[in-house]
Amino acid sequence: MLLKENERIDDLEINGFRIIQNPSSFCFGMDAVLLANFASSKKNFRVADLGTGTGIIPLVMAAKGKGKEFVAFEIIPEMADMASRSGKLNGIEEHFHVINMDIRDIIPNPDISQESNKTGKNKTDNSDAGFSDMIKKGTFDFVTSNPPYIKVDSGLHNPSSSLNVARHEISVTLRDIIQAAAYLLKDKGSFAMVHKPFRLPEIITELKATGLEPKRLRLVQPKAGKEPSTILIEAVKGGGEFLRIEPTLVIYDDDGNYTEDVLEIYGKL
Amino acid sequence: MLLKENERIDDLEINGFRIIQNPSSFCFGMDAVLLANFASSKKNFRVADLGTGTGIIPLVMAAKGKGKEFVAFEIIPEMADMASRSGKLNGIEEHFHVINMDIRDIIPNPDISQESNKTGKNKTDNSDAGFSDMIKKGTFDFVTSNPPYIKVDSGLHNPSSSLNVARHEISVTLRDIIQAAAYLLKDKGSFAMVHKPFRLPEIITELKATGLEPKRLRLVQPKAGKEPSTILIEAVKGGGEFLRIEPTLVIYDDDGNYTEDVLEIYGKL
Image 1: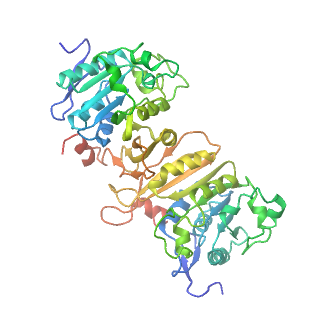
Image 2 (image 1 turned 180 degrees about the vertical axis):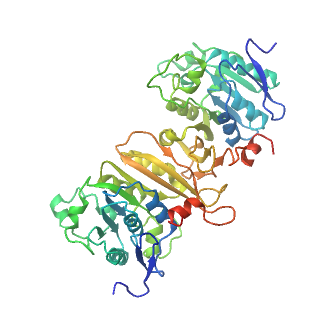
Image 3 (image 1 turned 90 degrees about the vertical axis):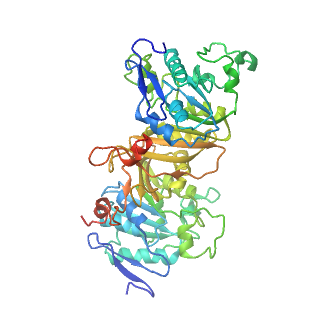
């Protein structure tokens, strides 16, 4: 009943949690799992996820007890619908809200009066009535995002496909996401993001410019001695200057097997 | 003849190069050697080192053929003198110039006319006549620095000691150093620095604000699975946005011996 055509249910292997995915559109990758693991969110936190896709990040965080209430934003209606059904599949729909809207609309447009904005004009809510109450400024303890990594400037075919929206900055830029996170967070609330190493300077500049101070950074390398493929970063709204760089996470050992650190993240140790 | 009281000569073990040090004031550490190794400077380059201490960075770079002409700045007269004598000790004094001056005076004070500034008032040159020609704006291909790591705000005793000037931001701040580097560099020239991980956000912000775009970053970890103790970063004046994060450098293996990467840096492989 919960499944539509081409969809399947995958076991997340954490406390029995499962996720609905459609292999023909987009399946979650390791980056999302690494971010959910990296995020320092606590069990009583109110958490937002920006560009949730299938909802993988808040689902893993819910499975790990890293939050009390989750609000996940997704622009593509089919993906938002899938994420919402995954919430029901795991019986957490009362604490797992999926909002089908553009992240760029989270910050109210100053040209539109606050009232007309609150009516949710041009927004569709697949799962929750009264979602506008959920996106009040400064009401979240924690925000996560696994945003598109690639700037749009060349050779992009089929820009509207789910895969392209997830991978390229078609519907949101890095700045849009960081500004939305800063808007949603309480003072001293945290924003955790996964991204590509080559964009670290821009990420740090944008975070600091928005009042989010980088406090934790972790590089992820496929192997010892190889360049990192991924970065995990956490920033605190109104935090003081002091970055803790954590030990580089290595995915595979020299024999090509998962390292103990990764097995622990996947709950296999 | 080249040695003064309490000084000694140490072998750098690279192409027969040696260095004069005074163990009672300050001896170079691994960070300087790692930076000299990390720096992508080429053999025909004109290189400046900001806060050179005993001259360790340009000496190692000269030993490795990473520059044609070196200009090293040092505020403490005794240290500048020692670095200058190390140049003579290695027979490279014609290409190794030590200037005893405050890095903050590299950028001409706008209140003083260009001419009076060029006379080098309030500056002492321990080794070179006419050094003002050597610090013309935009004339260096490469700049290095192993600056003081610690902000001055608490509990600092004996602020004038060589050790404190080398370790604390007494005579220069991070911003002073980055601005001096940007001033000295040609367009597309590079600035390489070693620093502490916790200041990375500030470093990146200051570099970008000064037109130096971070292009290479390497973390240095004492061991696999331990937090990095040091970062190496290189930025290009007027470069485009794209950071390459290199594989994390691990110093000791699980048995407490130097890793192959470090042995290679020290020329033992």
